[in-house]
Image (cartoon, rainbow, N blue to C red; front, side, top):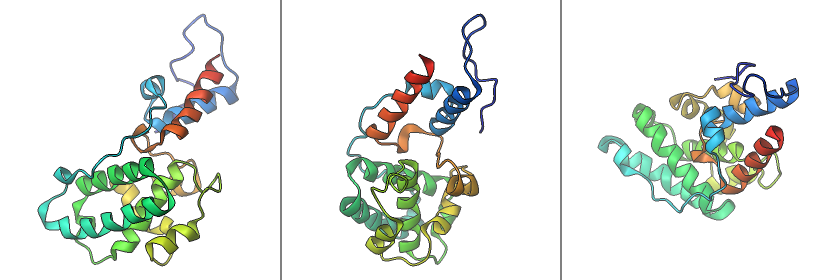
Length: 194
């Protein structure tokens, strides 16, 4: 969902922002799921969280387990605990939204690469050059572009894959963002509102 000039701040009678500042605030709000989520945003690190098997139907558990093993390995080798938690959350929510994705004959490496690529993109790891796509695919052992593997996963959670891959990389929730990434967003939010 895109925000427009109808973002409910500033209040009537208060100072107004320039268009660029409003656009930046709107983008921050999009990234975390709206104005209320942006208001509540903090920089608390994501916990070391176990995968939520309660969201996974029994008939897809073996395939999900194979994907999870690869996701965990990649996060442990190339990322960190917070990103592993974000990837686990994403995988669980994708399964809950569309378990049929895991009944297909796709290789677990492709799905794992898609999950890790989505989380890395949301946290700007590629943009900041902390991680290269080639490192990710090499770690997981998959072939092809992780972005193409991510399309169905993004659609399952209601994110436009084209806008994500070639645009903002927003998932619409702070649940997938590390504390450090959210700290930068909080600083931007506060600077723009000052």
